Every structure is written in C-alpha cells, then in structure tokens.
Length: 152
Image (cartoon, rainbow, N blue to C red; front, side, top):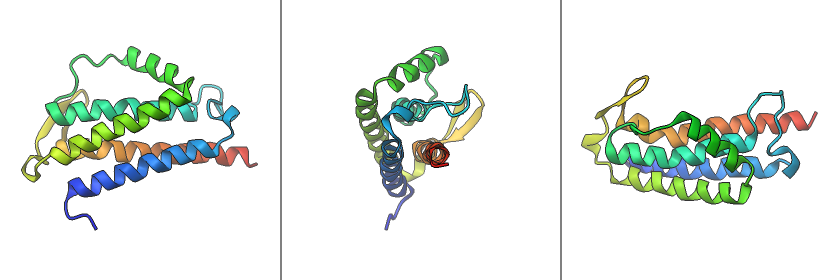
C-alpha cells in the first residue's frame, strides 16, 4: 500500500499506462486509427497525446513551470505523425511515462503544494504530478468506448 502521494501516483501512472496500452491492443489493427464520427479522435491519437505529454509533465515537475516554448501546432503535428506509427508510439509511451514517474519520485512532500503558473491559471505541483494518471485513465475510457462501438 502506498504511503505517500508520490508512491500512489507512481503506481497509478504505471497501471494507467498498462491499461491504456491494453485498450488499444484490444482494438483490431484497422480500427486503432479509425475515427468513429468523422472528426472524432482516434485511439492512437489519444495515446499519442498521452505519450507526448508524459515528457512535458516530467519537464513541468522538474522545472516547476509550463514550457515557455510549447507549440500547440507542433504538438498536433507530432500526435498525427505518431498516430500513424504504432511501434514508435508504443516505445514513446513507455519512455515518457518512465520520465514522468522518475520526476514524481523526486518531489519532496513539502513541494506538493507549490503553485505553478499555467496558461489557464495555477495548478499545484501535486495536480501536475497526477496529470499522466488522470489523462491516461480518461483516454482509456474513450478507447474502450470506441471498442464498444465495434461490438454492435
């Protein structure tokens, strides 16, 4: 049983990554990059977001700041590129989640409530640390919904 928030988030992030990957792998290969409703996001697009933002979150934890050079257009292009290359995406998901987990492990208890300026307001370091777990869990649900649409 985890004794600290950091231990809880490390274990939860690891489990969320495994469940997210399992959700994608349950889809037939020809449906992993399928949009169920025209412009709706594909499963691989969602996983690409999680993979990329794992490294971004690690940087935010380490630097206690939102990346000044974050480029939304470049982020969207990279998601699209990765969504078309499952082997590279799978590797990046593993690598970047490990980066986030490694940074979570370094945060002392007295830093959890440090506020970090974000484009939409402030968030505590604890909230930023929870982001990979939350985001992957959220997208796992969306991918499982796509899978349920295939069963009908």
